[in-house]
Image 1 (cartoon, rainbow over the protein chains, first blue to last red):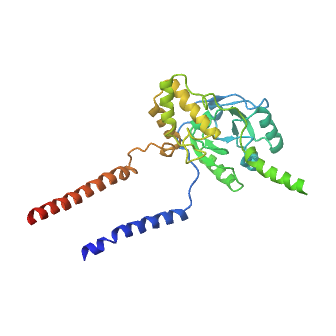
Image 2: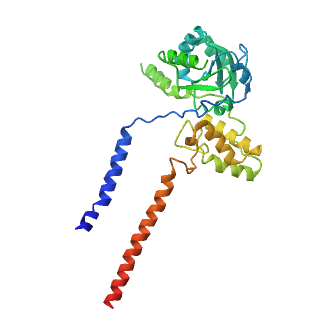
Image 3: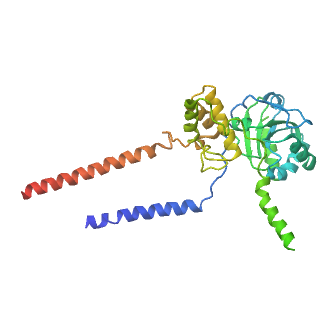
Length: 176
Length: 142
């Protein structure tokens, strides 16, 4: 009798795994790779200007006085167009935004800013994504809150929507 | 009409292209290191690092611009004398364990290593008992 029951064990195990797989299929998967650098100091870097209109960006430009936003973007990135008005809204609130343009050409950067507005105080050119990799960013656009001591305090992945603006302002306040 | 339709179709096809950058790849994205021994070290490491843009591929398999930039980091750091495991640790410090395809024993992964050993031990125990029993059965019959 006991061995008859044991015959069902493999089928029960199989059904269990099918159940687990089915359940996992219904769960939302987080596609984003979050940076493990939150709470870590911003790495040392110095990038040349992304176009002649603004200075380049270095670590020292993000430290001292107040928290700032570090915006990783590119002129070839479509969601960056939709977040441009939100960046301008943040700048209008007195937030300093330092940009890093990933794999971009000076003429394309100038074009983008002329069409969609320029909320940046400076933009560094990261032609080989080295600063992007150094801060644990895995795409464009991403926005980091950097406090006055140069510590990375918060990461926003993806374009900034209208309802993200108060959230970022709160994170900047927290980083003071 | 047909021409307009054609233009619309062309425009749709052009969208994914517009989302790509047009910059030349990083120096070591597609160029091997001169020293074959160092290149072999770099290649072995690149096959075990996850492409962050195309998450089911390694950076060695991917043509995404970011994977090229990661290959450049790996090759130039190997060239500068860093060990492959130091480079892996550098990336894990930035992206977490997810970036590495090489599993390590940690608080959350130890069952993956322990369960197969446990199963082999159970199977061995069951087999020994059964075979031992059968042998003594045949001995009894003889």
